[in-house]
Length: 107
Image (cartoon, rainbow, N blue to C red; front, side, top):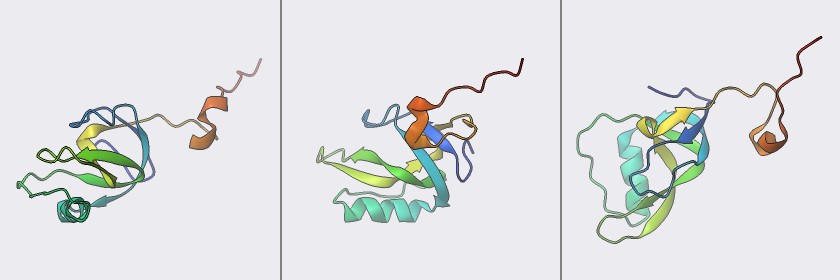
């Protein structure tokens, strides 16, 4: 598993090509069935293919595009294999990442 609960992670793999570079926060792992159900509610036909992929409920969203319909929906899930954890930024919050600077070394 790449991530753990609370991690900020960058999307480094995107099957639809729509999510590269997105930053999300991993909240908890979810079952494949939860992901399939969310996709179906969004109008995307989804079938569990038997792979044992780990998925995260995320703060943020991923765009998922239906293969046959080319319709895109946002879902609050991301596969662990598509995420790379970001290193901690000390006391910086994600909303203020642009203003966070490395701490000065003591002289």
